[in-house]
Length: 93
Image (cartoon, rainbow, N blue to C red; front, side, top):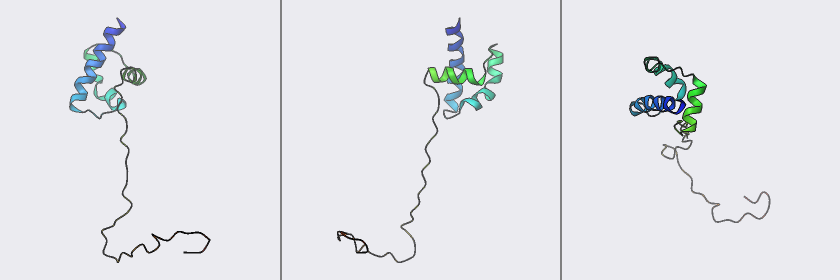
């Protein structure tokens, strides 16, 4: 009985994920509440988390990376004159 219930839940989630593949569990719970009540299934947030984790269906956050250097500015760019110098003591450069 439990496996059948799990499969029902997973099928509902898969249908939703076709249109919104990056939707997280908290939003899934709210958006699929109507579908779950139609299917007469009571699923909470934590249960859905555990079920999707078990079946490796959780979405991971994308790592954001920021670009900190702008090499295409209007100011003069100096050459790296210490590139070939080997630093051997303090205050040499």
